[in-house]
Image (tube, rainbow, N blue to C red; front, side, top):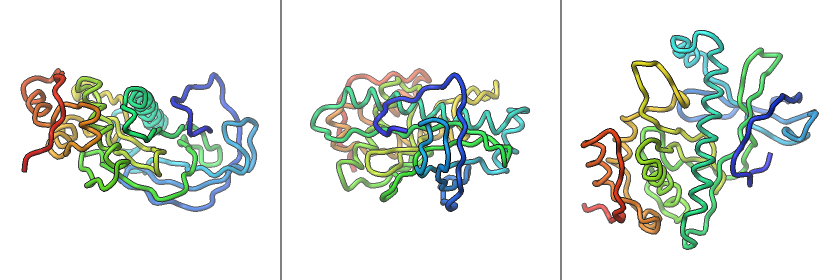
Length: 257
């Protein structure tokens, strides 16, 4: 599993491995629980022998709530949507790293995430590489953000702003979190068609409410200005006027007190 890879891909067939639980890990959000595990045997390099990983599973109450939508294979559907939004975030941050100015020295990336089936528990799970170091959360899935005190923190918040502008209001990547430049567990926010009952991404998608909150609370920083992103007042105006938000090419400005 290479942290430097830009985008993950699906395999035509599965692989077999054995893992051993090391400890239970804390997770924010109240949707999933996590365990630190070590690979004790593997038939391929996807999970390397002796490497430490994080395995994540959905809480029973979350699964029960979504059984109303996914009547069969609920856990599998939820896992696939978690992986889907991580892949979308991977692709967006790959493009972001190509277009950002050289004055922003960091190159953030999202971890690879794999789908696994645990035969002993008879359950679908997700697995990703364990990150060592100080874990930081820059914003949450409701659009609330920290007050940045470094260029790296400003960059993470500016990336969320950039995703909304780049996708013309169709997507917003929140839940920016990780260790250094290595990120995981994003929430890709997309206004859903409530009548159809469809869910494109994971259950952490709070839809238009999160988008409105992000626009209301995000403070443009030096990275936003280097990226020449539209100011938040313009984005809020466009959101109120039309559901097809298409920000114009105005530059980001300092929010007035």
